[in-house]
Length: 122
Length: 109
Image (cartoon, rainbow over all chains, first blue to last red):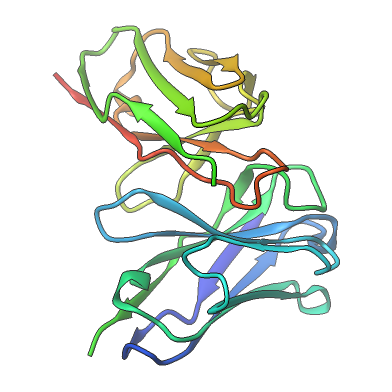
């Protein structure tokens, strides 16, 4: 059974940093690209970042470029999102998702975690 | 960035109704479009990929069509389990950000 479990969400002050993790099981992690998608309370989905199987290709939404860094550890079956210079508008549920078929971030996500909540507030 | 615009934002319908949701892209994305269903407090669920391909396990009452800049999601006969919010997402590889539409909430008339 495919499982993705996010953790690391917290209440954090503006300007601070936070690292999210996503632990996966049930599939061969290094065969697939992975994504982070977020959803502010009561709002729609916002694609945040994607990473290829080998970490050589990483893409970011303009809203997080230069502040967030996506990474993965294939040996640990884990995906990460390092977030810095956090702003109130970064407050959201953060989901990790697996690419449906590709090792490169070129497609939709077919399996999603249940999310981890980040709140940026003083 | 490629912008995705869904219409309507909210749709009231009854069980058994045929429902159509439209998604428009600000530039051509060929057929690189997905549709998701999301229920409150839950993660999104992939319904359709590459504009018209039904994801495994998704009921056949869901269908997708379109290419270029205009796409539709159709539910042929709305069921109680279908009341949810639906999102389109473009994943054109020439775009570095795979943007979502703003969502369409389908609620009970």
